[in-house]
Length: 485
Image (cartoon, rainbow, N blue to C red; front, side, top):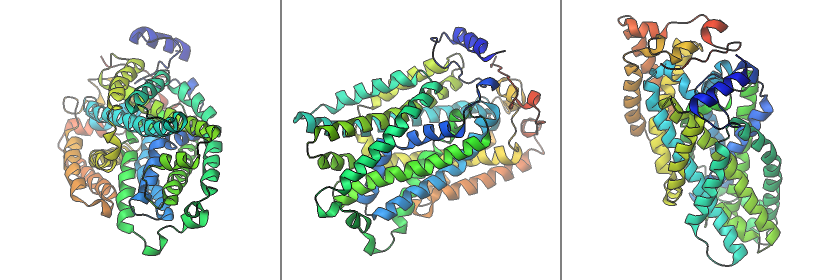
């Protein structure tokens, strides 16, 4: 079936508007998998360069780090967080399916609903967090322009609804939006850095910022704490890594585009956010307050800052809602991606009224790390060792098929997720707890399955290898789209 015919069929099935992305939990048609590395690069970079990451990067300085320690912490968070993310992203390239649908292979068809619920909650939190962080920045700009206080709640809601309008369109809106905003983000980032560096105050000079707090010795405990906290955010995103790559042409396109964008995007945020807070000697933790201060009332610069924040928030939150919508449609299979996005958006807009979410970043990230570190460990161990990177795609949609396990659940996977949660909580973040947990839980899960499969026909059938042919695996060259019955 051609892609156009399939999209028409899905639009009728889910009663979705025409003009939006129709594919949800279904495998994307081969003819649509044409995205090259640069589009993936733009999507991921726009995802990372956002007000939340800039604010967090500045918070590292306020927490006591030097400028270069903050840069190093951001880099470490990417290296740690993307260890699982890149593995999960290959599923999208190889099979054209969303990440949460691929988890049916690991956790069972019904078991993937639990992972989807966690992902939906995480998406809603991130949407609200980014909206609030951006709204705080917009409030500072508007107050400087209007010379009077503004209502943060009103700004948050209007800002949130503006982002919802784009997210419902789907993947093409992400791709097109990323192309247009990338150049503007780079140009605006450079302008902001030039303004900060040339602000007429000694502490804003590059030599002062680059040497800020460097004479006290490396704060490795603090670096480890924040590295793992920031990496936990990427662990919580591994379930949707495939969502952004299922239109990719090759694995190489995905690898280059994703990791390069992650490193460059984090460096941009670290420089902008870290420089601003270091310039005021860590006395303010909000980089945007400092940036607005440097504008000195210049209308053109305040407008530029306003647009910069809007673009940053727009590009990341469209993706948060997009992945959250896919999570909902994986649980409620009678809903299409469009309606799943609408549901997630409703919760996200409501939480955007709670500014205290920004202040609790480390606490929320710790909880997400406790949950997603063992989940990622189980996924990697199962997908790389037992599946050997192969998935029987038709069985993902078949309640009587290979991935039904025990009444739809792989209880071994969930056992080690629960145990892993407490393991992660018991290991100090300064000891890179999510890394230790991933290794420990991954090994224990592998050992458990290796032993139990000898006595369980259901488990043995679920993990047995499928021939990697297009017809049986549903990989490149297949247009299999089977729905749960």
